[in-house]
Structures are given as structure tokens and as C-alpha cells.
Amino acid sequence: MKRISIVMALLLFAAFATFAKGQEKAVPIDLNTAEFVEKVHNFKTNPKDWDYLGDKPAIIDFHATWCGPCKQLAPTLKALAAEYGDEIYIYKVDVDKEPDVARAYGIRSVPSLLFIPQDDSKPKMGQGNIPKASLKKEIDEFLLGKEVEQ
Image (cartoon, rainbow, N blue to C red; front, top):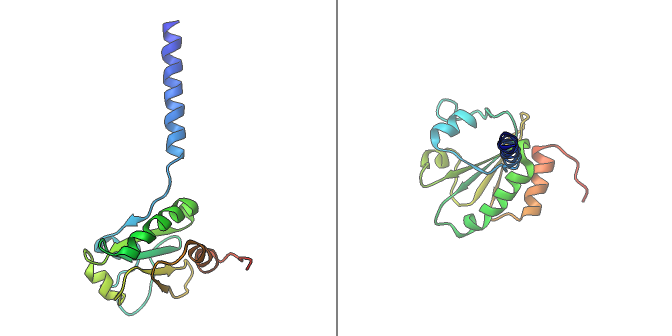
């Protein structure tokens, strides 16, 4: 009887751990310069030509820790990362910690969002605390190529 109880407890623990792992939500990913060059675009060796290195569409959030609108935008991007899961990447680049990346893309104000489609289309820049509905529309239409009803 004691063995059965132990086995049942272990099975319940394993089931709970598996369920909890499946519930993990995607979150925005912080990138430093080396990671940006590896995962997004090697602006050091290829500064003039755009060549996205990722395997799915992405949004790059150029932000700063002192920026009020950046702080307001952060929960929206976190919610979108969870909602879209593995359909897109949402990356964050702190312009104060990674000035070379910010300079390479001409970032002069924050937040600035770079929308990068998977196809060979040129990326698109957005600025400011963009509302969630507008971000979803941009993700669905520009990044994922879905038709969105107006």
C-alpha cells in the first residue's frame, strides 16, 4: 500500500511538472550586440545590405530603462509574445547598453520598433508607445501575411 502511494505521488508530481512546463509563456528576449549580430543582422560585416538571419518574423524593441513610454509598452509586448508564442520573436535592445546596435539603425528616440518579416521584404520602423490593436494588425498583416478584416 505504501508503494502504491509513493508511485501515485510520483506520477502526480510528474504530471503536474509536465503540465506546468506546457504552460510556460513566451516572453520578449533581451539581446546584446553579439546576440543581435548572430540572430538578427550582422551590421558589422554587412552594414549596407539587409539580410535577416532569423527563422521567423521578429519585432525589435529599441528601448531604455529610463523611458516612460518604453515602460508602458513593455507589458503589451510581453502579452503579444505570449499570445503569438512561437510564430514570431520579440527582441528587446537596451539602447544605453548596446549603443552600436542603436547607431547602426539610426535610433534617435525610444521606444522604436523594427518589424522584420520572414520573407525578403524590407523591415519597417514604428515609433512610440503603439497601441496593442495596432501592433496586432502590424504583426498579422505585415509579419505573418494574414488578411485582417477592417
